[in-house]
Every structure is written in C-alpha cells, then in structure tokens.
Length: 174
Length: 458
Image 1: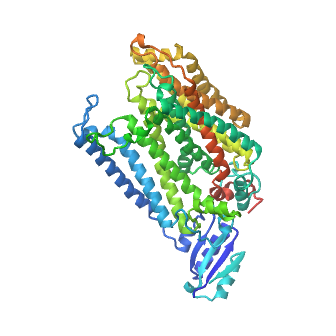
Image 2: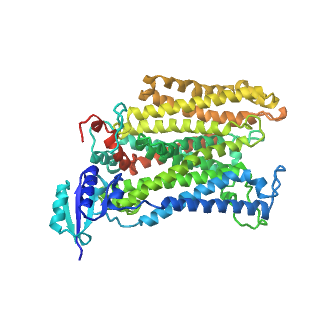
Image 3: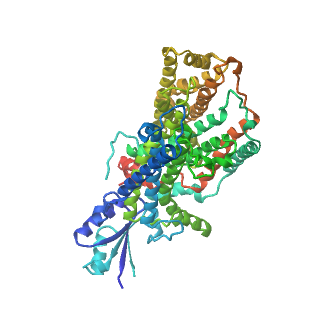
C-alpha cells in the first residue's frame, strides 16, 4: 500500500521555492493543488505544456471546411439563387459574401471544440466529485502531494525536507 | 515573481490577504440580502412583467401592435437590438482584448462585465426574433433540410450573417464566462455549510480540483478563447452594421459603418459597465477591488471611443455633402434639421459633447460625475441607433409616402421591459455568482496590491 504525503503551504511563492529544492534532492512531486495558477510550477514538477491549442486549430480547420462546403452546396450546387444579379455561378465569384459566415462558423467550432476537449481532458463535468485533498485549497492554501512509493527517501526524511521548505501542515494519506 | 513599477497605482487597496479576497467576494453569495436588494428586485420584476406582457401581446397579435408603418418598417425593435448588442460588447472587450494586452485591471471587472454581455445579448436576440412576426418559425433561418424543395436560407444576406454572428457570439461568450467561473464556484462549494447550496455549487463547479495540470490547461484555454473572441467581437458589430451598410438606403449605405459601429458599441458598453459597477461596488463593499483607478481607466476608454464616434458623425456629414449625391445629402440634412432634429441634437450632445468632460481628471475620477455621464452615454447611444434607423427611412423617395414613427404602448413596453428583465437577471446573478473573478484577482495581489507595493506585506 503506497502512502501519500500532503504538505500544505500558505504562500504560492514558498511552495514554488520548496518544490524546486525538493526536486533537486530527488523527491518526485506527484501533484500540486492551488486556488489559482502558480506561474513557473509546471516545469518544476514535470507538467508538460498542454496541446489543447493544437486541438483548437484542428477544430477551426474543420469548421472552416464545413462552412465553405456547406455554403457551396446550398447556394451554388443545389439551389443557385440570383439575388440582384450578384454572381453565383461558382464558388470563387461568390466567396466574398461567404466570408462572414465562414469566419463565424470557424470561431464557433474552435471555441466549442476546445471547451469540450478541455472539460473531457480535465474530467470536469457537471456532477463530478471534487478530489482536492483539502477544501482550503480553493481559498488560500496550497497543497503538494508526494507519493512515497515514487521516492527513494524514507518518510521521515521527506517530512524533514518538507518542514525545512516552510510547510505549515503535513498529513499522511494511505 | 512579477514586479510592477512603483508609480502605478495599486489595483487592490488596503492590506488584503488571499483569504480576505475570498471572504469579500463570497460575502454577497453567502449572506442574506437586505431590503434595498428586494426593493430593487421588485421594481425590476414589475417592469419585466410589463415587458413580458407586451412581448406576449406582440407574439399573439403580430407586429401590427407596434407603431411601424409602410415607410418606417424598422424602428424601435431594431434600435433596441443594436443598442443591446452594443452594450454587450464591453464585456468581451474587457475579458478578451484586455487579457491579450495583459491589462491587470481587467481582473476585477471581467466577471460582471461578461455577465452583462450575456444578459444584454439575450435581450438583443429577442428583437429580431419578435420582428419575424412568427417567432415559432425562427428555425427557418437555419439551413435545415426541408419540404419546400430543399430551399436554403440566403447566405449572401447580411441578415443571415447576423444570425450566425449573434449566435456564435452568445455561445462563445457564455463558454468563456463559464470556464472562468468554474474555479470560483469550486471556492464557494468548498466553503458552503448548508447541504443544498453545497450540492448546487458542486454541480456548477464540475468537480474542479485546482491541479497544476488543470491550471495549465485553464490558462491555455483562456488565452486561445481570448484570441478567438477578439476578432469575434469586432466582427459581430461589423456584421450588425452591414445590415444597414449593404443596403441601398441613403444614410445607411456607407462604408464607414463597421468601424463606427464597433467604436459606438464599445463606447456604450463601457458606459453600461460603469453604471453597473458603481452600484455593485457600493452595494457589496467592493471598493478595495473596484478602485478609482479602474473607473478612471474605463472613463479613458469612454473618451477615446466617444471621440471616435464623434469623428464618424462628422465624416458622415462631410461625405454626404462631398459625394454630390442628392439623396445622400438630403438624408443627412433631414437628420439634422428635419422633424427628428431633436433626436439628432440629443445624440450629438450625449455622445460627442458631454463625454469630452472626461478630459478633466477631477471629473474622470468622480463617482457621481461618472455615474451621470455613463447614463447620458447610454441614452445618447440609443438615440444614435434611432437616428440612423428611423430618420434614414421616414422620408422615402416618394414624398407621398413620407411618414413619422409613433411608438405604441406596446413598443414602449417591450423596450422598457427588456431593461427590467436585464436588471432582474443581473440582480439575481449578483447574489448567486461570484461577482469578481476572485481567484484571478489573487494572482495580481502580490504585484498590484497596495500593501505589497509599499512594502508592508511580503
């Protein structure tokens, strides 16, 4: 049975500096919980940059393609409409009038596609149970989670190091 | 840690800790409302009921209930539509454009400004819907396969562009707003004591935990959505202006419309944000977060956009003469000196003349002056749309069809009613949602908090 240590800090900066020291000593930090983003923590605890923006770009391309093909089919292939003698023979002649909707639809698909991906990747959906270790982590406390199974040091050594970095509370969770 | 120049005014006054921010923002949600709140809610609800009654009547008997006639086919409905959409623009501008420019003062106002956007766009969307006459057939604007021999909507029409623009704008703003709300709902959830609020906020918070990876994604999503919302907000009002600009009506058919409408939208939107914020900060004691500096920043935007609008009015006048087109020239002469001269004068005074008072630092930083001016701007911007729409069409090409627009009781009811509905929604929002992006405000505490800046806190 692996044991987890939860070290609580009352300042984002203290936690960040502490995390740097612990990582330098070879302690693996499993997770950090905070009420707001701590800038600079990601490379320290090994969180890789998200690829959500790439997804967003792909959703945008899909939206753009859908919008253009849709309008091409509706207004050029299926039912060409002569409105005030405006050109409607082929896509290229008609494209200026299609730009507003093509743009709006691209934005629509990008934003919603990205938001849905974000919720699914985070596993945050209506009715999900919150898994933060302490309710204070959404207020003014910051918690570092260390899995002892991942670490070479003993529990006492890690607790000692955590105390040195300024943790205000250390709890063990089995 | 980020450092900020000493000379910059602090954005969070007094000695605040992270916990203080949580307490201050959650207080209205957790506490009991006072009688002033219930009084305001009652007044707003009564006005909203008048509005709902008028809307129901309009749907029941058709738009003949309005004062429209053969010549003036667009009047208060489209005026109100453009007015509400314009008001909505400030919210997205604050949340998206200011995020891209890394303006820290946006943190304190973005939440409520976006709420305002969402409610304003809801009110705006009502009007084209009602103007259809048979709103239950509104789905006909969508390209759905149908039994009319596969007849599709006209994708060349700016009215259809508007359908896509407004619906995209509304749904993207809603998603952007909600993603920002989730961590704050989690804060309220974790503080809730009573079981029912805890249950409700647990559902609303989507199980947010605040993991480092989630924050990493959160920031990326916010940035990309801001990047998308920025061109979106400019495109939406440009497309709204194209409803007029792509027509052949003198007074509407002008290429200056898209930028001119966008500037006007930002102008009126910021005025509405100020009206709401000044009440909010006083009512909920948020003076430490919505400081004088925030108000001054917003007033500076008002004077810039107000002057842009002024330049647009004057260029329109000049071009109508310089073009040598008789009809164009007459449209503007009629605007300024015809039977609707008073609405033109009101528009010029409220939008061009009075906002110039903001050049004085004293006025820019005065709560009372700002509050009065913000309301004047909103009146002026309503008249701007009225002037553009009604004065351009009430004197047709054939003098025999010249006419005037006289609003009916129902016209007034629908318009004033939407203001009532808007305030009901905003009042309910203010007691159930965190009115400040509390967790985002915490990120600027150390760089822009007063006690951190002058070295009292570390």
